[in-house]
Amino acid sequence: MAKKASPSKKTTKIHVGVLYGGRSGEHDVSLCSAASVVEALDKNKYKVVAIGIDRDGKWYVQDKPQIIPHKDFGKVLALKKKGKWLVNHFEQNNQLRLYDLSSKNKKVIIDVVFPVLHGTFGEDGTLQGLLELAMVPYVGADVIGSSVGMDKDVAKRLLREAGIPVVSSITINKSEWKANTQNIIQSAVGKLGLPLFVKPVCTGSSVGVKKVKEKEKLAKAVNFAFQFDTRVMIEKAIDCREIECAVLGNYNPQASILGEIVPKHEFYSYEAKYIDPDGAALNIPAKIDLALSDKIRKFAVDGYKALGCSGMARVDFFLDKNTNEFYLNEINTLPGFTSISMYPKLWEATGIKYSKLLDKLIELALERHKKKLVIKT
Ligand SMILES: Nc1ncnc2c1ncn2[C@@H]1O[C@H](COP(=O)(O)OP(=O)(O)O)[C@@H](O)[C@H]1O
Ligand SMILES: [Mg+2]
Image (cartoon, rainbow, N blue to C red; front, side, top):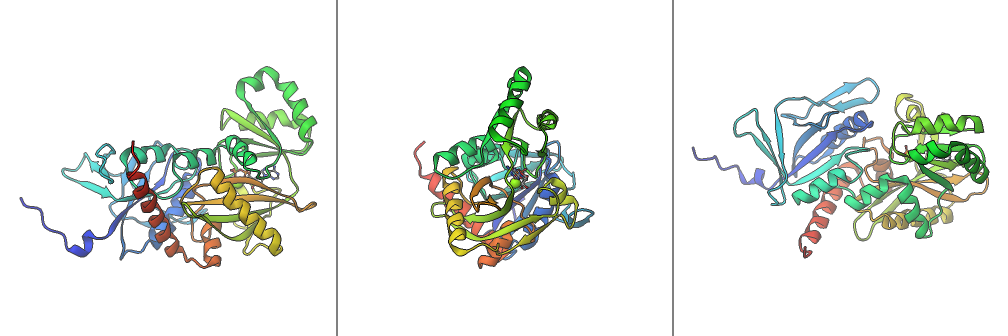
């Protein structure tokens, strides 16, 4: 049977595959970010295809994206496990194809992927590698920016090399820790003092992060952090304000105005971020004098470039309350993206509304892809 020709208006729409959920500890946060993204994508320009990834890593194309209420996050994008989807990433024709093996002839085609996936297997370069293989444009940092952005230890070394201030720390792996526990405790406290922060090298959302005030409690915090990664960072604690900057762009990235997170807990823990509805206040703009703010914004762009980022990233700083010295803490290449999250809020305050920001991110994905296509391999 001949296929029906689709009306021309429909064919010109860009098919945006919103990938959400995923295998990381930030699965639920992603469902929430995805609800805002799907809602705000301009339906005159885009055909939105929501692709939910469950906690085991299975992909499910949603027949109709559905936004539902959630006890902690207000609203989330539902993830229905229907069909038996096969992802074809070897056709190399700048599109991603997904076939439903449980339903004859059912397939979807994606022109650009919008990964709304936080943490492991979404933000860390692994998904980006798959999309590079498929030669499909995708939003956000590419493989290198994503993977070094996720690795607090490698990121720190690159930032330091670029002349960007970072907090003093040591990083240890599990076998070093097991063989030298007492020596490591002595040298960490000797070199960095107390209190300390202990964190897994490659997590986000404060998962596995502990503040340690007494030497005797360091081992417990380190062992706890090792549950989430094979490497752990022990860092000097800074009595700080937490300042964030949104950066956007590929080859000429721009910095937004600054925002401040004021946690109501001892630090910006998982509970303060997601469980306690009054866990933290977001102040936009951050109350900082102009000269210092310009300096931090410049360092945000320098840090973004040093890590090889493109598309977008939220760059987080610690500003020492006592000395006014600042440190770049981390670069998040897939920051929280709900309509009330810091990244879109900062752009809104700088003059780019949420749905225009999504347009811009898709444009940047297509621009980078076009530039990569002409590179000789
Ligand atoms: N060296 C530090 N000094 C002061 N607070 C810190 C330090 N390291 C982490 N924190 C606190 O812990 C939170 C989470 O740490 P962070 O390094 O940002 O990890 P994550 O990637 O999980 O967000 C920070 O937002 C801050 O509140
Ligand atoms: Mg953080």
